[in-house]
Image (cartoon, rainbow, N blue to C red):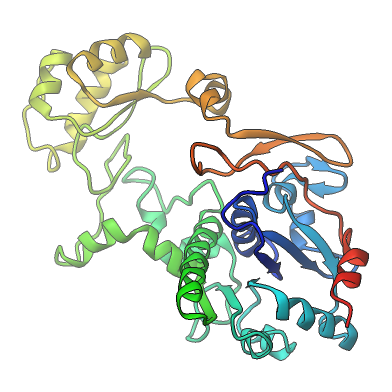
Length: 376
């Protein structure tokens, strides 16, 4: 366990559940903060029973373990006066509190940002909602797939004749967690300068809109024209041929931005035409050529002229690669049930990746110690 990380000595109170809020707390924990996770007595974070597959570790989902490593757990009932008072005492000494209640719920329970900051003006409260704190969508469930659906992003992936295509990840949750982390770190910097706390807010919808800022800006300044996905091998609705993924004789090849005359010479085919207007026809011709040889030979040939291309890997191939091994981004955590493999922080500080190999806690596992520490 490293004790010289940049957030060492910072106390974070994680009052969130599911993915978005807890993922922000995870990032702060990876950077050295002490994270106390507040869970409901007996039930805990709903994510404990939210399964990606039927795999569990010690009765809790692997998803919960991935999002909640490096945390302590205390079980509190916000409606119980004694438990709420204990929460106030912890918040009074905390640096950061993270919440992702539905709008208005935390305030009704007496544990909202205003109530907590009244007891600790230097406190930074980070809140994630589904679609903001008011407006016509405020009552909708703040769930990842629903946020993707409302964001417009589903019309960027897939091919032209496909319907809307969702991302195969909980991308709204993860992005909102990253956005909140950025805001919290910025607020911590301001506090170190001016001594004041903050309430940092974002939502799944805001994170998804920001994720699309490049192409949405194009849309806003292009007469409002909609993105046009390629008929086949679409990879980016706003980029011209040859940009896409193509089948080879033994696999798949990703081909990025390349001038068509250069590619025409290397593939020995006719690629005359407008790179965007004639995109579907041009990409069909490229596909017919690339399928004739294996991936390795195409990469060797194309890279001699600095054509940007790469083999499309699956997870086993990625994990077996020397390039990935050199990143040292996996770790084994000693859970109560069995060792669990998971990822490590995606950042390096002074050449070193933060190393905090502590598994996710059981519900209320650290309750007695935390209650004693924050006793009145």
